[in-house]
Length: 186
Image (cartoon, rainbow, N blue to C red):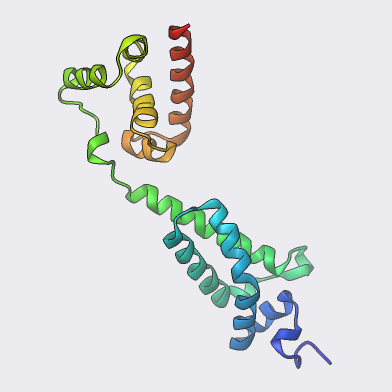
């Protein structure tokens, strides 16, 4: 029996995608039934936010429905599951970018640019002794990064949004700050 006449449950994923490209709703439902659970698990390994995972899943399968005709399949050395994962991974990156773009720094972590003396007082009250002295001895740009990441518990992405810096710069400054702190404390 030819692939065109078989029931969707009898087809492999590549043939299901080809049928989806022709508008076969039953093939789409079968493709979703087979691939959604594993795709959701893979996304959850990369993102703990269930809302984002749900949005990415919805966007992924909407893209599959709309663009199934673009799937080249094994002729291009790909698989249907790999194609689905590529779409989902790109949608996840897009979701992270949207979140970082719209993220507002927490009010408690906003820099005190107007009164740096108050920041120094707050820092002295929070961290004292040799560690406080070493922290206050850092260059201001290194201290800001270390304070946001260590004292405020922010991620690299959140710190980058807060300080208006690229993530790579935040990582570099955090490393430099930790090295200088280590030197000052030994």
